[in-house]
Image 1 (spheres, rainbow, N blue to C red):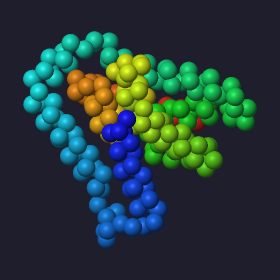
Image 2: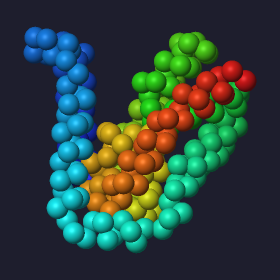
Image 3: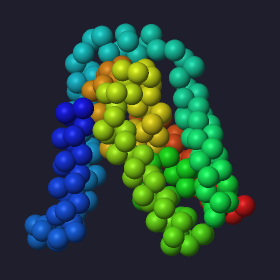
Image 4: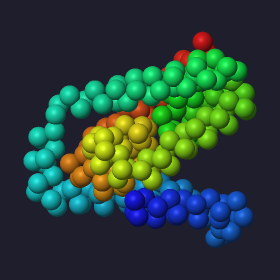
Length: 200
């Protein structure tokens, strides 16, 4: 939990610096987040490659994990449909469009805004940010009570980037490839699924 709070505090600090424009000159001209992510992935790669047990543990993982993104999608949709029963002013397709962001708030909110308007786009932005923050904060608790795959499912499309360090720390390095695979598949599917539900 302490590690998650530290990561979240850095996010909050960055958010405040952006709001109050307290940024170094030219900071926004360069895509620093991309380079930081590359450095993170490089560091994790070294850590995994340097541990001889990592590959052995990965080989021992259940091959059925290939279906993990599908289970994450179905679980998300079931939860969204249950919540939609209490939202009388929103159709189930609107709710499924928002849920199909799977944490990818930047892309999904833009697409939904284009198709359904600013209000639903804002809801999508907040909903998917909350999904990411919940994963960052409660990953240790998820692993303890629901197993090592829980934060990967909760993270959805973010497991390849923002929630990746928390997942590796709590689920173990043997789940690094699973986390990257999940994030890649979910990132790929988000635009198709969001547009599909928006067009219904």
